[in-house]
Image 1 (cartoon, rainbow, N blue to C red):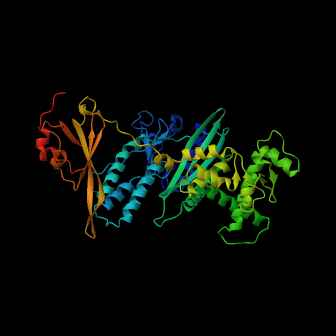
Image 2 (cartoon, rainbow, N blue to C red):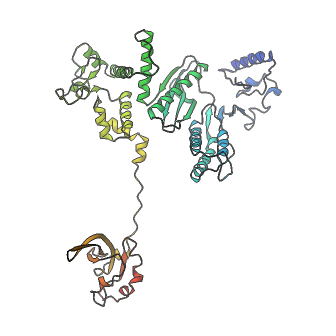
Image 3 (cartoon, rainbow, N blue to C red):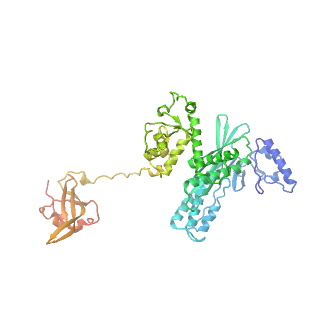
Amino acid sequence: MYVDDVLSGADSAEDAQLTIKELQSALDSAGFPLRKWTSNNKEVLAHIQAGHLLNSDFLDLDTESTAKTLGVRWRATSDEFFFVPPDLPTEISPTKRQVLSQIAKLFDPAGWLAPFVVCAKIFMQEIWLQELGWDDKLPSELCQRWHSFLQSYSVLDQVRIPRWVSFRPEFRLEHHGFCDASQKAYGAAIYVRVEMGHTTMVHLLTAKTRVAPVKTVSLPRLELCGALLLAEMAEAILPSMPMLNSSLHCWTDSTIVALRVLAYVQRFINRCKKQSPLSEIRLEAKELVAAERLMILCTQRRYLTNEYRCLSQKLPVPPSSSILFLNPFLDQEGLIRACGRVTASESLRYDERHPIILPYECSLSRLLVKFTHLITLHGGNQLVVRLTRSRYWVPRVKNLVKAVINACKVCVIYKKRLQSQMMGNLPRERVSFSRPFTYTGMDYAGPFDIKKYTGRACLITKGYVLVFVCFSTKAIHLEPTSDLTTDLRHSLGSYPEEGVLAKCSRTMGRPLLALPHYCPEIFSRPLKSL
């Protein structure tokens, strides 16, 4: 119940009718008669007066079988929630006040539009950073982004959320929570997973997003904020759910979050056993180290069960073991390490001489590789492999690193190949037979320093080389020049009067752009017949 709205459900029509009678009896006794009843089942509404229904034609006409509660619309015939986009503004240059008013119309209490709403929150935060007045116009760049965002409003009416999550008391139910963060925002979502024999159904239950603070915050801290948001959502929502036999699983792809959560759990266990005194709220370094060691130990016991049992009993590792070639042993803390050929090295650390063995298929190995990839600012394959092997030995680590980097969206975007434009056809002069230098291209090379000795003084001037390239034979002719002018009569003055050029083309550079206009006599000479 929320203010004057009551939303409920039941596993059968009889249970729903009993709930209606109990609600009516309880509220009528206090003078609060309930009206505007709706349901997706006519049998539930059969015993309610027609004047107490939301609409007398409810469930008979599809257009009349919709209800609006808490800003969300529900269509009874299909038993699903949907959204109606708000009217779009017509202002070409909106103000800060108008943008905020439009964003406020996106009412989404359950978080089903969280990916869309968070974009509006981020945009509003950027407007605040511009320090604009309430009635100031947005800059042109923000106006373009705002209009582009408004164009995506049209897809909101395509969002459909089923009201019933396919659950019955005899089905197995699980809740899965996910959290993640970026430099601009962080969020969390809870899904419900229902197993019905050989069929599994997954539905979004709720979601919530928050923008990152204006003050720069590190990504690991934002990921911790996302984990806290997920924990708060689970604590507030799941106890009020009618499914009592459900289990909760929380997921994160952050090694920092997993490590800190485990450290807090370990602290709680130690305090319950009275093995550790009360300390500050913040985790100490030794607690994080102990949590990391516990995480590695649990992983090795799960994936290397036989090897760990044999090593604990001081028995040889089975010949069929996949880590037999690493000559594994247990260290003083009970971790399985590799023994290589660099044991006698004095320059290497203990972790480098005897790295901790982690299986390829475990989630911890993938999280560690991903963490290394992020702290190296999206380092490449060789860098991530080198840093990972400085403490851990993961079989086929190169394949794992390659898979993690290929799945990184940032790396995929920056490694995307640019589209190459098709080259145009070569001009007729380049593909036709002609006398050398009949069709010529020109360009300048330089400048070069030219030393001129006059007496005892040395005068340094700039000189250039004029390059003539034959279109037909690729032959090159070089002429020294003192400047970048287009007067070529001195360069070509040694040629006979019948001429050698039929066409001269500029290859690059602006100085030769107007060449035919400055040297018309060069191009007007008749050619000698071949």
